[in-house]
Image: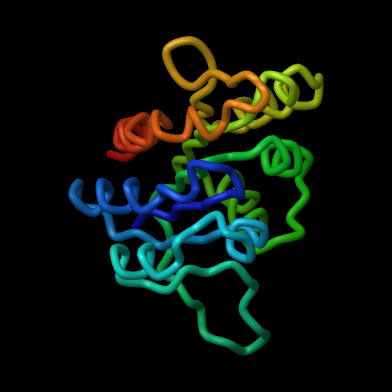
Length: 177
C-alpha cells in the first residue's frame, strides 16, 4: 500500500500520472491531498479516484469513524511544497496530510519526498534546514543535482511538464524490500 501525499503545487494537476505508474508497478494507492491542494484547482479529484479506485482524502476522520485507508507500506510526498517541508520538519501536524507524514517518521516507514519550489523560496534558510532535518529522520528527499532542483521564480508552469514523478517511484521501490 502506497500513500501519495499531494501538496498544492503545479505538478499536482498531473498526479494521476504517478498513481497510474504506481498501479502498473503493483502498488495499491491511497491519495491524500493537503487542504490547499484539495480545495483549490490543483488536483483532478475524479481522475485520481478513478485511477486509484479509492476516494481522495484530505480531512481527519471523526471520532468513532472507521479507519478509511489500510496501513501504508510506503509514502511518497509529491509535489512537496516549501510550506509542507517546513511544517513537517518542525513537527507541525495541523492537517491530515501533515499528521500522516509526521507519523511515518515514528513508524519507520519508507518515505520519499519530491519537492517543487522556486529558487527564491529555496534561498530561504528555513528551506535548507527543513530538507536536512527531514533527511536526518530517514526521509529520502529527492533534492539536488541529479534529482530535483528548484526553478527560477515564475517558471513553475513551464517546469510542471518535466516534473520527475518517476524519480519518486524509483526511489520508493528501492526502499521497500
